[in-house]
Image (cartoon, rainbow, N blue to C red):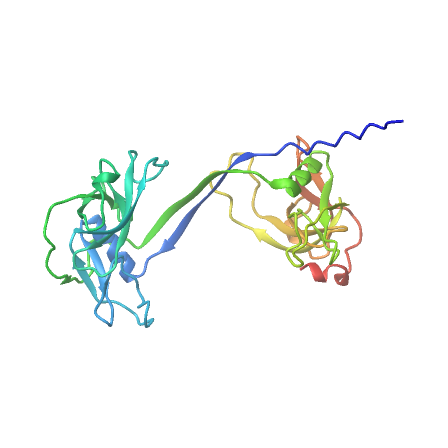
Length: 327
């Protein structure tokens, strides 16, 4: 009698989703960076001279070779020479130019280092190492690197040596906010795909290392300690223990009217049976009553796809020895 071979179970559908990582990077400026950016606003390019006599553009506040404090500012030319370049045929949103351009390292006359910026050229055949270029200033300038709109080809001989500069300007720029944004398509892979499919069923699934027996949640597909593939699925939780936590007092920028009110608590939660803690928000309890060892359970989102937050179960707090290895 012939027995038909069992039909193999098809792998779960590969998941893909657009993902945006975005945050404003805010920093204050020291005297050198302040002078450099304020100078750009005034169509002046400043560098700084090192102890060895080199002129660094963009300037830094400490000598990269000796770590000595640098304050000897000099003005360099707005023209220079391309030292290396790469053609960008498809500019992305937010880049300096909307038409194809070259990314170029340009050593301005009087400088010993090169500045990275966009070079406006009709095509890659018009760009070469050694090409003479000059700054095209932005029509409106505020004290940022974008005050240099781009570089453009320019026929000229090399200019004279840099001139000393005090670095003093009216209304100096003392701080900047630089938005950082990364758009990409995320595919979670086999292990995390299983994890996400289980969450849709209101289950939390990890994977156990066959060597050290640690259960990773969310699973990573391999044990980072032993370097062995993890294929044994283990359902953990749903309850867990708060190991550590922080109180958040700053409301997220661009949050809607339904945003979480501050202060609130964000915690590391060791689900029962898991070998490490995951992140989660704590709700259903005043923020100042959250504590290490608090026993919690998930409250699922309205669509049931993930835990919206965790709330106290009413159980006695866990003993410290039961979770101290998961801190």
